[in-house]
Length: 420
Image (cartoon, rainbow, N blue to C red; front, side, top):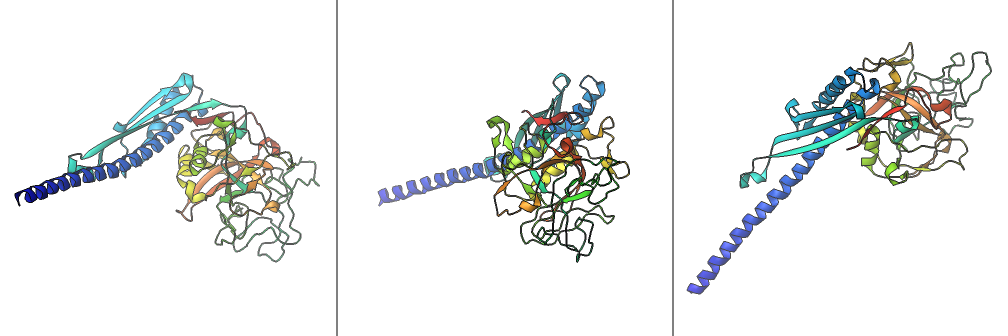
């Protein structure tokens, strides 16, 4: 009997020890997962702060004394707009290094004293995480290095005279737009009309004179509502009330709707790379691979679409806007007003490029392929509401290389990219 009692006692001791070990393992697993999540939040904050800081070298020459102060201020300001595990980042947790000769800004975020949960049973009451990132303002000779990872269908000539607003060739309130009416016509933008060319016909797409034949600047300044639109979805809108609206009608496909696409990876021979993380990275970090466009569809490549919608990239678009938060659109002079980019307003990080594709070719079902016929400059004007109804407003600013796509030198010769 004594031996049996000894065995029972040993078993109880083993079970007790095992329970402690299992509880400790569970505590480590839960809190380790929280630590990884916290570090990811700190990394996003560091990435965004570094990009914001490096944007100073887009506005200033690296030899300008104001460049260092501006880079420091922007990096710190943006870092403090983030939080880690719902704890706001404090200035004491941010370290910024500005390297003007390299046009580089490095940011370190040290999130300390983050609370634990189960690990408290092991007398571990807090944890520290750290993240570091660096961004540079690089010289580039091509505007296609600032192409965004979403593409938009171009505008077309809507033939349906029964619509509430016939003849203006843009979606309006209470108007559904579909490229399926007999007589609908699409031709990509062919280049600007000269003032002395009254009979100019330069297509139906964005930038053409179809909507205002007296204005040789075409659609410059037209407001676009960038919003996803699965087939059959309804409930879009038309932009603002003064006639600028050019997107949001969500029946089938409409101008202003967009599709995410797989951008090429410069680290892998510029081959397409799938994944939501890659899409988000290319919103903040300009891609260095060339993007081919044209109307000879046999000569230009296909680009794969990427599942997702505008709500899935909400954070990155808001971070892009925060890089130049004071920028506004001037509808009179048709340009961006930005106190941070007074020397050249097109250098604002909110001025980006999107590929355009023909609405006449729309037959997409899930993941499919796109061919781009033009590259359009847009100003990311702002956002509205929250997921799943989140939308981004943008202003059309003209075509890259007068609608031909490809390289462009001049105002967009610097781009921001993460290097660490």
